Length: 223
Image 1 (cartoon, rainbow, N blue to C red):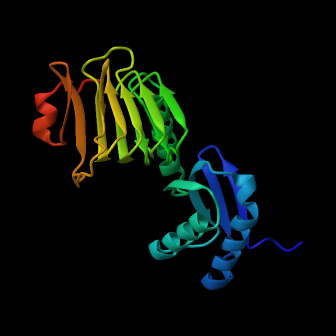
Image 2 (image 1 turned 90 degrees about the horizontal axis):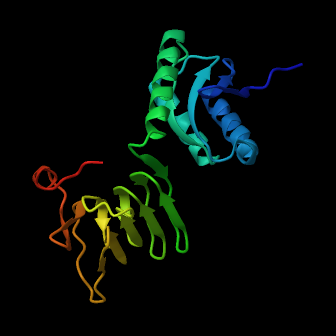
């Protein structure tokens, strides 16, 4: 039985892709494209680490293959793993440590954009890798950090934590709330600063400043 030119195998760290060493790179790329397109629904939209096996690849070829996987599946490739056993063991240990950290009470991560009508609630501080669009809402007992556009509604310090804060790369919310204090966006057109902004509570009012080292020193940003 002829061996398939591209074989996808799961492992505890993610997926291992075994590649034919005889095919030209162009033909191999086409095989990878077809394989991941056909397997897209089965593989889902998980965050995975990827390793290549079966043939030597230079950095440019690895980058092209990773882009091909991204374009033809819903997978989110978080890193490329070396097949060296010691390095793989080190990676697994580091991955487990990171997962433990994310599951601790210091905070959580969420990757994705929130659409209108979506509501997400967190019992810890939350870092969102994506946008909070108009009509979406995030509620956190701690701090909310948005590595994207904040256009919807965010409620930080939901358990009454007055030193909670909200950070966004683009701060243009419909409404923000910290503890029991609410601030709403003006109906008038306004220019949104290009720099990241931080919203915090002081003397019973919400202030929004440019995020800087000085701002972080001036306010209490403990988790």
